[in-house]
Image: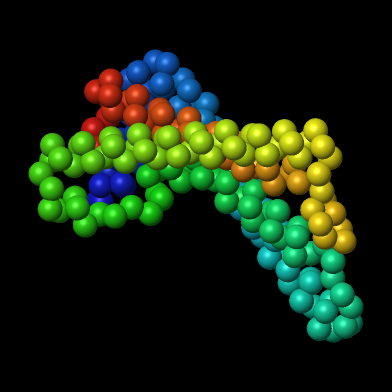
Length: 184
């Protein structure tokens, strides 16, 4: 049996294509998501290699490592935020499905849109705040307090970009639903 999020993901590409503006933006976001998820997968592999190197250097050579942990964190943060829109496009984020079985279809539709609107509001706020953090870090030349001291605009830029893409993805899903092109 196919779950509600899987059914929505399967219908999303067809439904979005029926609305020309939403379809064009949706296809652009889908293409960008495919590229970003490839880089995110590579970033996670690289983070695991960096951490493995760190452990090996500390254990085998008894040398301190000063950049590996922070580099791995930057890679993981980037991968997490930049892949979030792809996950949202397939409705793959954690959701509570217990209510689906209990509520009537009309109530589920209201619940579905309400959750999307609340998620959009949160993601837009998070994106806005991330962009302000990015701007401050860029303008002030802020760096982390570690010995390595990489610039903080790097993680803030991935957070801001990722949350902006999630916001656009959720907005497209809401528009698609409200114009009758998709049904929860």
